[in-house]
Amino acid sequence: MRLLVRGGRLVDPTQDLDGPFDLLVEDGVVAAIDGRIDAAGATVRDADGLVVTPGWIDMHVHLREPGQEYKETVKSGTLAAAAGGFTAVACMANTVPVNDNPSVTEHILKEAARHGFARVYPIGAASKGQRGEELAEIGEMVAAGVVAVSDDGYPVANPALMRRVLEYARHFDVPVIQHAQDLELTAGGVMHEGEWSTRLGLPGWPGAGEDIIVARDVLLAEDYGGRYHVAHLSTARALGLVRRAKEQGLAVTCEVTPHHLLLTDELIATSEFSPNAKMNPPLRGESDRRALLAGLADGTVDAIASDHAPHHPDEKDVEFSLAPFGVIGLETNLGLCYDRLVRSGILTLPRLVELFSSGPARLLGVPGGTLRVGAVADVTLFDPDAELTVEPAAFRSKSRNTPFAGWTVRGRAVGTIVGGRPVELPAG
Image (tube, rainbow, N blue to C red; front, side):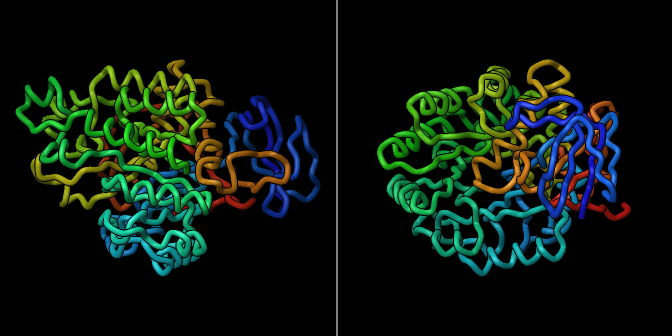
């Protein structure tokens, strides 16, 4: 198949490209980039007025399958991803049963091959059953197709086990993704500990509950090696620990989420205790939010990820303290981040593409993240001027739990290409 994407603003930070280029795809890979390409017989995709980038990769989603298909499935989750401009997602291991063995990994990959609208990269559990007691079968899972290990949803709390996970994962060159939460410090907490938790009379969850785990793990990474990645980092102090680790030359990286970049704990008051303002880690204060924005700009942050955590509406339709943690983001990330980070001048567009595409590809060691000649032809196209109002009822995801309902942004995905083939979304 030959596909010519013509006339778009092509942005690829891996090649320092940002300008009007044609893109030719042949047999699933990038064949050429030039100012003007004449390709007889090629299918032409008019990209006039659009931005064309390497396919966007969300490295932190929860697809819920197997076991919780009433919340999300591989099919519905990848449909939401494609609708949001993502060509690939990496799914966490907290399924039922837990993805701690090759059979679960293989099931996810088969469902993705059968029903998927985007590539799916499973992440395996670090410990058996995510219980934090015994090392999972990391080697067997890597052979089956996992690209990282994580007990996300829970921390690897035991330092001796974390040391073994780092050492063992190093042999397979896969990152260890940590959900940084000290379970004793945060026990009972439902929101960030600070002014607003005091005002609202809700149990607080201190930032130190994140910082202590990151500090401990950075020391372990320094002594025992391995690739250590902090999921959904949310505090200024944890970011500073990652920054210093990078300065030391350690293989320490981090991601942040759009909700921690754009919202603060004050939302719980202004939303009148909306359960869609409850997530793990919790929304922090303004000083933490500003620190995360600075980390995007100075290069400390390696990726933006949604932590897409679908819940059935009935589960969220309870009082704030009883509601499950988590919000969704696959269909809102692009518009929110382009509108509120790029259009506002906080980030350049190439930097945003790096955070959504080349950064995740590098961290996970997966194809994509570049449009170099010979690279896999995964491409995202979006209209930077299209206005979009976030309407949860129109989501392709099975779930609706977003804190951004009603927001109006500019920047809307208009198409994805995976392996050289345009993704066709069903009417809906």
